[in-house]
Amino acid sequence: MTDGSVLRAYAPGDLEACRALWVELTQRHRDIYEDPALGGDDPGRQFDAYLARDDLVGPWVLEVDGAVVGLTGLLVEGTEAEIEPVVVTAAHRSRGLGTRLLEHARAEAVARGMTHLSVRPVGRNAAAMACFHRAGFDILGRVELFTELRPGRGDRWKPGVTLHGLGYRS
Ligand SMILES: CC(C)(COP(=O)(O)OP(=O)(O)OC[C@H]1O[C@@H](n2cnc3c(N)ncnc32)[C@H](O)[C@@H]1OP(=O)(O)O)[C@@H](O)C(=O)NCCC(=O)NCCS
Image 1 (tube, rainbow, N blue to C red):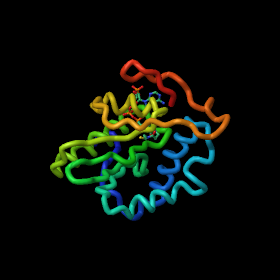
Image 2 (cartoon, rainbow, N blue to C red):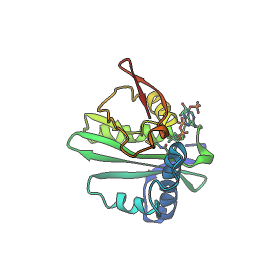
Image 3 (cartoon, rainbow, N blue to C red):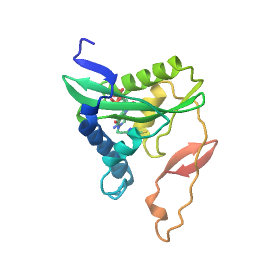
């Protein structure tokens, strides 16, 4: 690309940058759920566990001016692939880089003969859903429904989602 960005396969030298991106992914979830404990004490280490998965294809990183600013990969089962994760460092968001990562993951899935490609945002991640929807992820697959079991914690869930005419909290 002429804009100084390069999308390439992950290399061992990207480890720290990718751990940091995983921390940013966790931070996003901590922010939207207002729960600083989400993701545990050392969320960057979850990237190491991710790298060791035997269903992983990729990952791929996006570099801008020599710095890793984005990460994506595929988890594959049969002919179905899931994009996990997709993350762009905060300072580089809303410039099309997330969409570029999604398009790359899609091309890799097609090249491997996959028939379906999914991405599984948490219900409250409206910003990510907007990005995914615009990138063509407009088919609703399985929906996970929860009820809160902890006494007094029901008010942490925010109303505002409607599906098949029913209201949901997220
Ligand atoms: C989701 C994410 C990868 C999108 O990356 P990005 O580089 O900002 O994506 P793009 O620039 O291609 O697309 C941006 C579009 O996504 C949506 N979007 C992204 N961030 C948004 C925000 N904070 N609020 C509202 N919409 C947002 C909008 O539709 C936006 O379009 P706009 O820039 O014209 O307003 C990035 O926001 C991110 O890393 N978020 C934190 C990690 C995360 O939530 N990952 C998804 C987990 S499933």
